[in-house]
Length: 238
Length: 238
Image 1 (cartoon, rainbow over the protein chains, first blue to last red):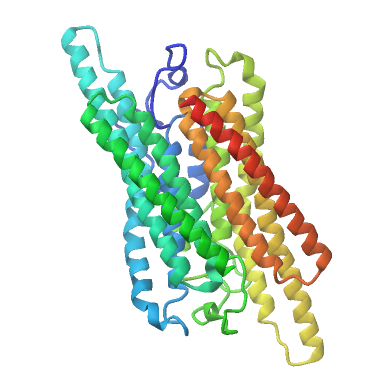
Image 2 (spheres, rainbow over the protein chains, first blue to last red):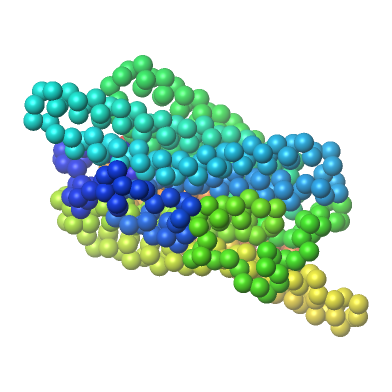
């Protein structure tokens, strides 16, 4: 769930079955990727609660991409025929590890950012003062709910660059793995961009909004360029 | 790792650092999605061993897609404005659950199929009889290593259909989640198709090969059609 916009009939039908903004209540602990099995995470996504949703899944897709690039590089390191690219391979591993780790954290942060939007929406609004405080809290929450997928986008563009490097320099027998890394980074970038867009639509600060929109456009353009070139290398290799 | 083809110099550089075909040795238990945390799974992908690789990750991407479609449908069920589509929503949930469950199993099966190819390659080949048995074992293993990603493709095309249904019938506030479901199913289909292609290249049975190649083409074509239409609906909704 990337946003909590009003439905076409002015309702929030998504709230009707959700008495609390998260599985564990507002402010409660979010189930993290360290404690959740793959099967449990999938079940949590499938559950009829808004988090974890597409934002978290996009961050996970980016983390999987970075992990695959590390594998493709790692399978070449120290092998005959790859001596000349050792420093590039080491860089894929080092940078990939950092990107993967940060994207793992963003899986949870995306869910928390969404829950903050809901919590702000539920603030009291009976007095003028309360209404103003609620608007401020909602605006701050929407900014956070934009910043998180924007960071996911930034990191996934880097993951896409690593995937391209891994298909060019990594183990040639693992070209299909590098291709999956490319495809997942691209999906993650596009998915996160939609979450940015949908939350930006609720932000009143025009400077923040136009800056973020511009950055989203730049990143999408960059992703198109790298993705196109990287898949051309895959086709050449297979 | 989708295949174990010979490198450009006739070597298998991927084997040099892998004394055994899996983390736990040939025939040993494969770490399953039930017992592995998300973080551990990502670390296992990133490790410089061929499994779990792009085939397993493609199956996981498909499972995540099905899970998101179930969420988008589940967030609409029983809500005002969605009474007329209850049976469609129930179908997304029911079918999505089956597809997700099968794709979860394929995460592990893909790794095992690859390991069988490696095990067959290592069979003795000192006599004519041994060589013939080894070729038979390798051909059987390559067929399995094609069947697994082909099943992943079939299921992910179904997942893509569910994602399209969820964007059309599901909770409209979760349109970006449905979009991520579409994007991930598309990536999973393309990723799995590359694994099919790379393993098919080693199969000598021309009937098997041409049948599988034809099916791959059909599924890619179908995926393009659905994906294009589904993303058009997303654009309309956002």
